[in-house]
Each structure stands twice: as structure tokens, then as C-alpha cells.
Amino acid sequence: MKTLVTGGAGCIGSDLVKALLDRGHEVVVLDNFSSGKEEHIAAFRDHPRCSVIEGDLLNLDLVSSALDNVEMVYHLAANPHIKFAPGVATDRDLRNNVLATHQLLEAMRLKKVSRIAFTSSSAVYGIPARLPVKEDDFFPRPVSLYGATKLACEALLSAFSNLFGMQCWVFRLANIVGPKIRKIGRTVISDFVYKLRKDCTRLVILGDGCQSKSYLTTEECVQAILFVVERAQDEFTVLNVGGRGTVTVTRIAEMVAGMMGLKNVKFIYTGGERGWPGDVPRCELDVTALERLGWKARWDSEESVTRAIREMLEQTT
Amino acid sequence: MKTLVTGGAGCIGSDLVKALLDRGHEVVVLDNFSSGKEEHIAAFRDHPRCSVIEGDLLNLDLVSSALDNVEMVYHLAANPHIKFAPGVATDRDLRNNVLATHQLLEAMRLKKVSRIAFTSSSAVYGIPARLPVKEDDFFPRPVSLYGATKLACEALLSAFSNLFGMQCWVFRLANIVGPKIRKIGRTVISDFVYKLRKDCTRLVILGDGCQSKSYLTTEECVQAILFVVERAQDEFTVLNVGGRGTVTVTRIAEMVAGMMGLKNVKFIYTGGERGWPGDVPRCELDVTALERLGWKARWDSEESVTRAIREMLEQTT
Image (cartoon, rainbow over all chains, first blue to last red; front, side, top):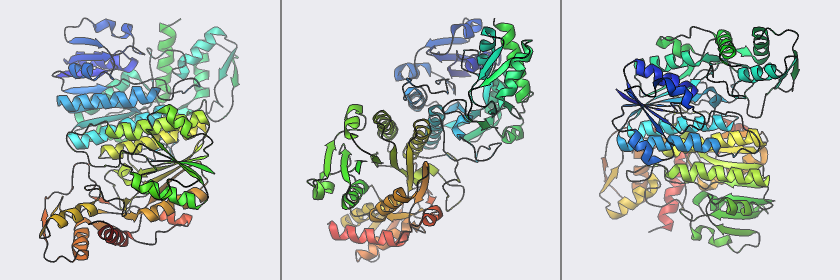
């Protein structure tokens, strides 16, 4: 089977490409390398069943040619930065998430490619009314442009699925952590490691530290996606993907400091319930539907965070 | 108060502009006249408190200047055609609904205009799991590009509201009927009147005729919007707007034929549950939240349809 992975040079994407090659697929990687990295795909760039196209999803001709003889698309390309900072254009997520997804769907329609898995986000829920949040306990009230545009992508997939007979898998991902996701500011883990290496006596923590989220490693995330696509055969599948439980930001700070062998680090809180504008203070994903399908994360949220910290400390300095 | 009405030359928009002028507002009409009409605004085009700007929401500079000293925006501009037909670009709704709404929100952010009412649609619900459908009984599964992009607009409003402190009112409208909405194919009423005037012996009905929807007249729709904006002071209000009950397509056919004085019209059904791809066979809006706020439609769905048929027969030939 020939498969296209958009964002295939990204942190999750490159692990997915590796897993698909291991399963015997022919894989086309499409990435504009805006956040994807050459080093992520270096290990299989010359694999006989792997080809890499450098380009943007907003280029319809390029996407169309990337879809030649493709049977299945894993659409992971997106702006990965959930935080909105003053000075950033408010159409960044609109372009990189919504317009790019529309172009991909349009190219799929024209080329008669009818199967797509899409990595959405727990950010589509905004501030959930009830925790843990279930897939159908939904009120469309995203608080970030990232969440809003991921929801818009889900809506486009839904309409394309109904109008043009596409089969879709939508994965609402927990916070995904892993050794590749170490860019400063991308995750709370890399942020804390970076700060404590600069100054091991104090750690500035955004918000009140009580923010709590579901976590999952990239490794388990890829396993879950492949498991579901191979088994769930509904026209439109929507699933939360995460580990059980949550971890607070303060707990992560304690874990990072502890694993770095630091003692008496002074935690300085910037205060407020939210770490930053658009942050969701508390989100726990209900993963019952995923578990009922037969896949259960081996590691709960705390263990996923522990492993991610350990790998980050081992692999970076 | 100075108010901007996008789509102010449209069927609902022009009635809203008239009502705002009657209330003493200064009103700026912004319309690209793609579906809006000069004749809709002819009665108040020269009103001393009304100004008309012909232009597109995708033009940020134009929108910014239209927002000069504006305190409140009613955003009604959109592609009004819910049906997707082969040959139509799949980005029509994306451009006219999502990109246009983003440009408007961005211009509001830059000009510090912080209040916006938005006409969304019952199409955001897709095929509701339960009827009548409540505002928070939601699963994002729109079946049309129109519904998908209206949901995307709601999501953008939500994010802008949270990030930039905007107050938003979102109205999920029932099928709106009235004398101005008579373009062929726009509503089932105009469709039936047109067909029966061409051939009074037979009427082709799309689907099985059992499709049933909530209806409301443009007059009552405008009343509801103004009532809510003046009273609901939450940061983000989402309300269904419709009359009680539903009317089936076959019942509308009987009503149109009867009011035209026709007997023994042969109804020919194209068959199938859905009238067209992207159609929602059954949608009844739960309007309890709107009624609890103090506004109740004077006419139920059947009476709204009756009045719309009568006005259409009186005003067109």
C-alpha cells in the first residue's frame, strides 16, 4: 500500500513514517520543513520504499502529484505552536491548518483518494464542561486559534466525507511528549529543562502550576493511530488519544528538578489559572472509546512524562 | 450608536438595517452585492444615518475603514447557498464564510471593535442525534460545506473572543423564509412556486418529501437577533433561533398548490431520504433557551411557511 504522510518530517510524523515502512508500506513524505527537520527522517531518507517531497500543502499541483497512486493519507502537517503571541499573525493557524487541509482534501477529491487520518487536538474542546471529556460531550468553544482551526479542519473533513464519500479517522490528541519534541517553548518539559540548565536555583512557572493535562508519548501515539486505522471501519471515526490520568505543571516541575538531581529549586509562579492566553487550565481526555476498540496506553500520563523527561535529559545537553 | 451590518443588502441583512435605523442607530452597510440586491436597500439608501459601502470582506483595508467609530457589528455576509453542486469550487464557502469572517475579526481586533453578532446556521449540527436539537447537544459532524464553514466561523469567533476580549452573539438560524428570499432554488417555497407556475399539473419534489425543518420569517428572525443582543450580556452567547415545530416538504408542496388554487397536482418524488447531497433530512431546533431569555416566535414553523408563501404569491408573478 502506498501512503502519504503530510508533516512526515515532524516529531510524530517521522515516527509514523518509520512504523509504516516497518509494516511494508511505500511511503511518501510531504513536508515544508517549517517545523519538520531533516534529522528526523535521516534514518530512512534513502529507504527504497520512501520518497520525500519538500513543499507546501498550499501548492495544489504539488499535493496532487504527491497523491499519485496513494491509497491512504495521514495528515499531520500543521502549525505545531498552540500559543498565540502578540505580533504573530492571527491567520497563521488559518493558513497552515484550515487552508492547507482544504487543499489536501480537494486534491484527494480530484485524485479519488478516499481515506484520511487526521491528527486533531484536545484543544478543540476549549474549556470542557465535564472531565474527563468524552468525544461527544462537545460544545464548540475553543479558546485558542490553534484549537479553533483544528475544529474547522474536523468540520471540513466531515463535509468532504459526506459529500465525496471519504473515510476519515480523527484523532484528538493529548499533549504528546517525546525526545524529538524539545524545541524551547513547545512543551512544558523542554521549557523546564532549558530554564533549569540556565539557572538551577529557580524556575519560573507560567500560571499557578495547577494546570493539569493528559500526556502521551509519540511512540504510543503512533501505535494508537495505526491500531485504530487498521480496525475502525466506520465512515467517520473520532477518538480521543491519550494516557490515563493527568499531571499538573507543578508536578512536572518537581519531576524535572528531581531527575536533574536538583534540590531546593525555588518555584516562582507568574500566577493566574491559565499559563498563557488560549491555555486550557484543565483537560483530561476520556479514552474509554479507544480502550473499547482494544488499544490502551501502556503508560499513564505521569509515566509518559517521566519517560519524556528521561529521554530529553539523555539526548540533549 | 454606530453599527456595521455586513451583508446588509441581503434578505435578512436589509430588514436588520431597516430595524436598526428605526431604533436610531447610525448604520454602515457593507455588501459586495454577490447575492445582496440594490432593491433591498433602495428604501433607506438615502437615509441620513445610513451609508453603503460596496466591497468585499476579503479586502482588509476596506473593512478597516468601514469600522471607523463602529461599536457593534452584525455579521450576516456569507455565501447563502447551502447546496453544493458538482462544478462549484469546494472553496466557495471557505472563502466567503471562513476567510471573510477571519478578515472581519482581524480588522475588528486592529480597530478595537469588540462586539459582534453572527448569523450561524442549524447546518452546523449536521444530522442531529436527538431532536429537537439543543445548543449544547453537539457533535461536530456537519454534512455540507456550508455547515462546516459556519461551524469554523463559530470556532474563530470563540478564539477571538477569548484571546482579544470580544463579546459575541452566535445565532443558529432555522430555515429563514420571507418575500425577499425568492431566488429559484434558494428555498423550497420559491422552488415549488416557480415549478408550478411553469407546469401546474405536476411537481417534482427532491427526496421522499419527508424532510422536515424548523422555519422562521425574516421579520421574526431580525426581532429575535435584536432582542437577544440587547439583553444577553455573557461574553459568548449561542442560541438557536426558530419557530416551534417543523414542516415537511410534502406539506409545503400541498400548501403551495392549495394557495395557488391548484387541484390534483401530481407529486413526483426523486426519492431518497435526502433532497440533495449535504441535505439534513430532519432538523428541529430546540428554542427553549431563546424563550427563557424572553423571546418567543409569534408564528410556529407552519404559520411562518404559510405567510412566506402568501407574500411570495402576492409579490411575484
